Image (cartoon, rainbow, N blue to C red; front, side, top):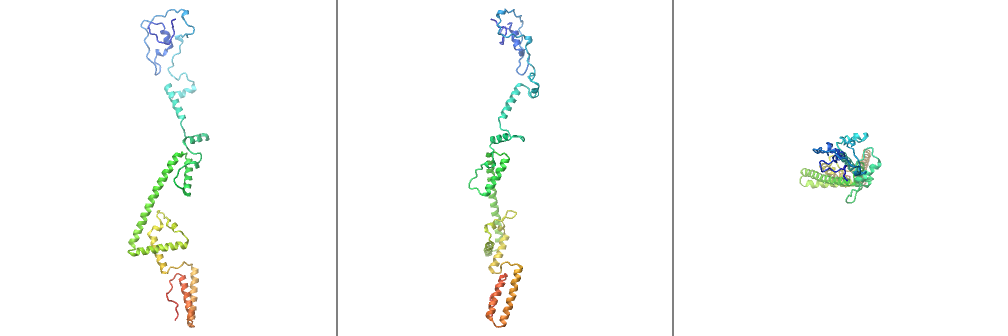
Length: 333
């Protein structure tokens, strides 16, 4: 049975099924869209189709009237509802629109930073996806060796900072390692600078204290420094760690060595007595004047034994005030 209506292109240019073929493929008659083709030439001498016997027509075959065939719209957006036309106007073709949808789906599958109006669930999902601990205490810095209290406090403070900035745990580890390495370099450089400063100050003392004077003065200074610290109940290590505004240690300065050298020399010669208040000094001076009067009375009475004891008391009071006792003084004839 002859099939008048078919989607297949007739081979015979005079085949009467050309009209049905064109009706079912109207896009071949005009250029529409990117996939359109040039109209095909009709047969040179088309013939009118012969009458078809109704017996030869399959009732299941669709009957298409070329006059009633829907033309291909020139604008792919034409059949869209009005509420979608504005969005569709952003794309030049269906292909562009589909690609945009595909790109959106890919972006949706990626992790997005929560906005200012994000919900708690969105924030929690984001932190979990990028590796941000739930609590600041959950950061793991993997520090080597035993941590001091100061180091623990520093890590706790940095953990709070990392958590407030939404820093993932692996990034926090890298940052902490970098900070530690930089700190070690700075400390090493500081130690070298302190050593260079101390050596320069010591060289200045060598230039000032020639020959044996350098060793003598350094010995006197160290003795005085140690003795005064012990009297005051202060640890020597604490004194040696005192820093000035320029970052240098106080006890590395040449001025301190000169100062304690003088103090040490005075202590060695016995001319440096304990510090006294003005009222205490006045009391001792009154006692000395009284003792001297008693000495004069004892001598006038010829009591040399009593006079010698009073002289010893006088020397003791003089030493208490910080004055050097007179050697041999107080001996009566």
